Image 1 (cartoon, one colour):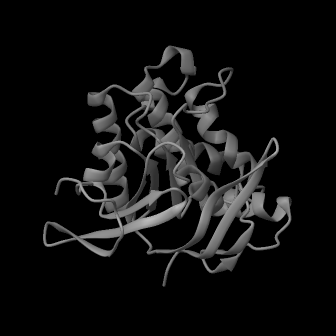
Image 2: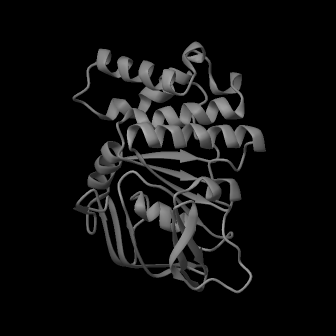
Image 3: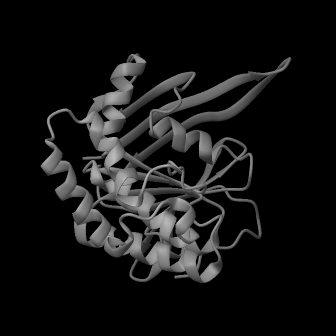
Length: 249
């Protein structure tokens, strides 16, 4: 059973006096536990698709089903509750609150989960900071941390709500190559150990090379769907332009 189903989704919006078609008739199923990259150039629609999957944006047409729940027609409060309990987010700019320490940033989304006691929140914070190797930096604020450490705090925050799906929007874009590779390996390790589904929006080949599923998107349409099998890529759908090569295996 898919953890995410996108069925015939389109998205358009007004930009000044122009009607912009961001997505056109997108259908996609995401299985639990995959490490999936949605890849495409700037303006291709990949971030719009990620935002729709994350219930941050809503489609103009079509249907989105998250963890068995049809999110069509839900109120903003209902969508916020679903996000809080099902979906974690990692952003390229980290989106940490500068006045809070690392542990306070990780705890912040847990404050929405009224059923958790303070002791339970603290236990989760400690567990996930340890998972990302930042226990000794728990009381540091973001401006006292490196870019890689800040992204590790963001990963711990995304996981602390026990999210089934983690959506990462260009998570390596503001990191140097070595740090970005380390962050990707950490997320891959978490994915393998915990079974958490990771979905990336990216144009970074390092992300594509580490993925086990690949969605290529251009001009608001899916051009290729690929999966790794026996250490090679198999494309079940492929409408890519001539000359566009596959990620490394």
